[in-house]
Every structure is written in C-alpha cells, then in structure tokens.
Length: 542
Image (cartoon, rainbow, N blue to C red; front, side, top):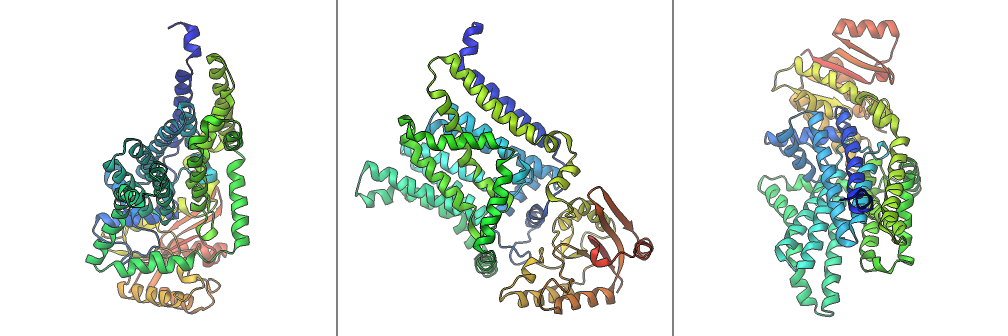
C-alpha cells in the first residue's frame, strides 16, 4: 500500500488514534492501581469477602444496595485476590469492556467513526477524577451490563433472535441487580423493543408481547432467583426492609434546591477538563437538524440520553460517581459530533485529517487539563486529590495493626463509617451496621437502629473498636438524642483502652501512634482532643 493510500485510510487512522488513547488510559489506570479503597468500595469488598465465606448481606451486613454489586466483588476477589489493587485491575478491564461495547453500539447504530469516537471518549471521561473514575463504584458495573444488554438487544431485533433477546434481558436484569438505578435502562430497552415490533406490525399487541416475552423473562430472572434464594434462607424480610423501605426514606433526605445545586456543582467539574468532548456531544445532539442520515436511530440515542439522566437523579444526591451512568450516552453523541464534522468533507484525506484533528485535540485537552492527576501524583496523592483528608490511606496501617493483634475469629466494631478497615484486616464486623449514617438520619427507624447497634455490640463484645471522626456515633452533636453517644463512651471507658491512633494533621502530615503509652503521651503532650483524632483504636481489656 502506498504512503498516499495509507494516509487516506480513515479506518486505519481511527484505530491508531483510538488505540493510542486507550493505551494512555490503561497506563494511567495501571500506574494508579494502588489507590486506597474509598468507603463504598470498602463496603462492597467486605460484603463480597463475607459472601465467599457464606455470610449473607442484609441479615449480617446491613445495606440498601441490591446484591449484584456484592456478587461482582466476590467474583473479583476470587479471581484477582483480596487486595485493593486487584479490585482496581478488575475495574480497568471492566472499563475497557464497556468502551468496546459502546464502540459496537455506535458502529451498529450509525457508523465506525461514531463507534470509535464514542468508545474512546467514554474511556477518557470515566478516567477523570471528577467522576471518581479510578474507584470501582457500582455505576461502572451497571454501565457494563447495561451496554451489553443494549448491544444484544440491537442484534436480537435485527436477527429476530429469541435466545439473544433473552440474554439481553438477562444482562439488563443483572444491571438492575447491581444497583436499583439500572431498572431504568431495562425499561428503556423494553419500550424500544416494543416500539420496534409495533412499527413492523401495528396493533398486533398480542404478537408483540409474545415477541418481547424472552426479554422480560431474562430481565426478571436475576431478581427472581435472588428473591427465591433469600426466601429460602429467611433473608427476604431484611432484604425488603433495607433495599426498599429504608432506601425510600434515604432517597427523600435531599431537597430539590440542594439537588439542583449539587448537579450544577459536580457536572461543572466534569465539563471543565472534558470541555471539547462535551462540546462535540452538543454538536452531535444538534446535528440531526441537518443530517438526515442519522435520523433513523437518533430517537434511540436521544432516549438513551434522557433515561441516563433520569438514572442519576433518584434521591437528587448527584454524587460524582453517579455521573458515570450518563457518560455512555454523552459519548455516543460525541461520536455523532465527530461524524458531523467530517460528513461535509468530500475526499478521504480531508476526512482522515479532520477526525485526527478533532479527536486528537479533544483528548489531548482532557489529558493536559488533568495531567497532574494522571501523570504526576502518586496513588496516595491521587487519593488526597479526590477525597481530601478522609482517612482512606490511614485505614491500611490501622487495619494491619488490628490484623496483627487478633486471631482470625476475633471481631471488630467501627464506630464511624470506614468499612474498608473490615476488608483490609479480614476480620468480621461485630455489628451489621457497616455505616453509622442510618443511625444519625432523621427517620422513624433511627431509634430502633441505635438500639440494635447497642445490642449487637454488647452481645459480641468485639476485641477491637475503631472510632472514626467521620460518621462517628460518639459525637453528642451527631444525633438529636445523645443516648447513643453516652452509651458508646461509657461502654468503651469501662471495657477498652486506647492503643493506637491516626491523626491527619494535614494532607501530607499524618501522625501514627502504636501502643497505649505512646498514644497517651501524644494526647497529653499535644493537648489534642480524642474527638478530633481521625482514627482511634481501642482494645478490649475485660
């Protein structure tokens, strides 16, 4: 092939550009595999760890999340080991798989340019610290299974394949099982499939229902099997309470004004480093006005964008990692934006040059804008950059201290919200409350929850108690009723002594003290209040 033909080969340059982009993404992820777990990851990892031992969520570990994410983590731990690096390596693979699935969706709906641009854009945006992309939050896996379900659906409808339609429903059903938000993607694809058959056979609703029945059966199967299993082990009542009853209370805690502010605040942070990619997405959104060739599947893309936005809105929390659910739809429109740029160009070399320029500049801008995080910070620095002085780094040495000073059957209680310590130490929690937040919220279940915590801790008498300043139940200001704080302080004073602490003086200065004498001397010499110490470790003396 001549040099001229090579330059004019748009497909070749598309693949080279996408390959180079994904290579950079992979290098960043591999370089920062060692970032410490954050709280949600700690919860998933601990429950996944316990699941491998036969301990079930909801009855032994209380959580409002659906069980799919714990199954995913259990599989990750079984394959890649019980380490935070193993978890993040699995995330890197899942992210690549999602980018590939989005490429296939874009290629099938429109063309290869759209697919490659969408997949690469997805990989770049989901790497961003603005969406906490290095941490294996549930949204990454919701997206993975949702995209698999969408691609299988498109293929099944084209081939009129019932087995593929069943598998599509199964994938989307598992997406829902990972996190409740995933049900919206299932409903969207269900409606799309019904409309697809309706356009072919208007009015024949009985035949349409029959045709989509495999999809519905596949979609309901993961939840159906979960319910049957939980009924069999007497865990359904606890599952229903935590994932439906309590979760509905939790979802009503944020006001509309707070939600709007949170959306604007966090979405602005995503836009800034990815401005050119988002700009291309807006161009793709508007391009239907002058591009008749994309109108056939534009409605699907627009519906996908709308349902993706709805998926991030429940509860109006708009936490950074929630926006991962929106990224695939935005990336698909980015692909349409790139396609719109090159559509009016006549020659192959002009199209090739335009694609290289538009995508190259857009991705380069994103990498350059985030160069400190991507290429310069250490894993520990990356944790501080995203999560500030939350004690995620400090959880590792504290957990190591606990593990070294306990037997494998000893139990630990954390009066705060750092469940990653349970996972790192490989010690069982003495209470099902891995987080203390539910006990401090204003709802009718708060008091019974506090009483349950007291009952569980006193019954199990854990060898270690860790008090975290974040989400601590020992602060008299944490809840309106000081009963829990008074009990906790009295319980610790009567049965435990302080043997270790981790005090974050600044993001780069952390004081560790090991041993009772060392801790007491530090508190006495500095005058530091125990309430202000980030992590306090107490050992049972009676």
